[in-house]
Image 1 (cartoon, rainbow, N blue to C red):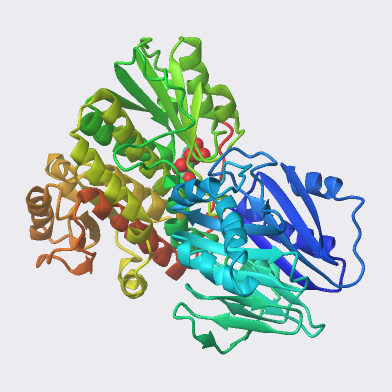
Image 2: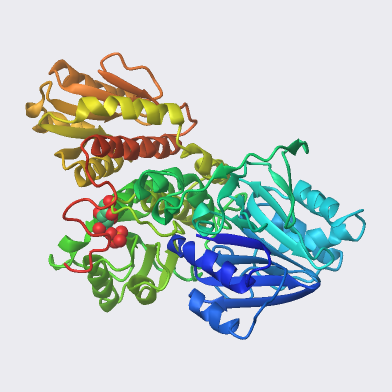
Length: 604
Ligand code: F6R
């Protein structure tokens, strides 16, 4: 995902900025850029691809003496990964770098264009710098122009802005996206979107809060809160450990990735939700022409996302949908018909079985689509069309945020198709789009639930196994919960449709059998409840997850009330991820690198 750095001081600024960006490389990016302000003159360098390309572009640039600089690594979300779309974005004499989404950028862009601003990129970010320059014409100071700019921005942002008239200053703001300001004994001020960029360069930092904004020079930082009150500067010492900084203060990458699902989902949704329809800029308009059924194919967690999609695609788009495990599909001599759209789902885009299945489908003349997290991966290059999930690099071997983004893309795809095929009423599509917009807040980890899971995990370390059970889309979620637990705790766990228990598995029920029951309020609650009661009557230990009370539970995790089952799905997904992580922690396992597993399975 995108990264930001900023610097005010006398050291060689190019090296400091690129070094900081390199520390943020682990987040993933596809273009990068820096802007340096020295003696009221700007130097700008941008490059597509890795930082080495940026270094080559800026090879001849040297700075001596005082300067101010800002830098950015961009993971394309709004507009393709081109130099024009790379940050910093420029007005006539100001530059900006930005992480997040400016939700009202279209509206601002139209207004500014009408007033004479000339836009050159496809990004939402560019409106910030034009808006700033618009206000600069009438404001009493650049800082006033900056605050007026912030007042008009809607959405999430971490922003650094520099302008030629104030040669020694960076304006900064944080709302919803992380931003850290640091200083050192050499009178330098630095900024980073993660403290990883500041390690070794600063001894103390301030983690800005939402609504914080301000102005920084070499010897002074003025910080304001959302009510425009000046805030005292409370610096905290900065760790020297780079790896822990990459984890943003979390114990494991898995934990960090669970916690960042809100930000990541905001990126997944960005630019794809209109008021009444879902729009995928990347899909060729003729992709669905002549298509009468969909076949999804994937492995592991991605297969579970595909299973969720079978419910959503048939329910919303009324299109026959089937799902295949890639390693089975390859060898079962499947009958493929050209009116089937073949959709592969893969975080890495490199999984051998999924890739081979995609090749088979192509060879059979099917139209193909990949839903993938890695641009330029083998599957993205091979498929006729691709939708990127925009989860950023996932380091934990146990997939979390990749699954969240896959399911959200598939939900959006079901609505996109529903509006194309006119299978859902417009107001129902609009209602679900509203729900989608709330996803980033639905997956924010509730600290009290996390604390409860931490405590109750100690009761689930032994026994002879776990059943995760649910109905409808909560069945694939149960499969995913069981897979997460298996992978990192090494305990035996199975996912089951709750209605299937009495057809055999219930024979295992006794107090040493743990049942994790998904009891959403808005999807088959009573039916699932009676299945859980049957297990409880046979003395299985029950841990229920539901917004509603359940008196037969030994442990009850109370989720929030939501207006729709899909929102319950996403909140329960977070609970299951945290539960397996806390059990694995108690067992002393390596959460990020579980035994016997690799992140990308490129052999069959
Ligand atoms: C589980 C997990 C795996 C992957 C599977 C497919 O946490 O990560 O089950 O989902 O190996 O990988 P991708 O999605 O890269 O094709």
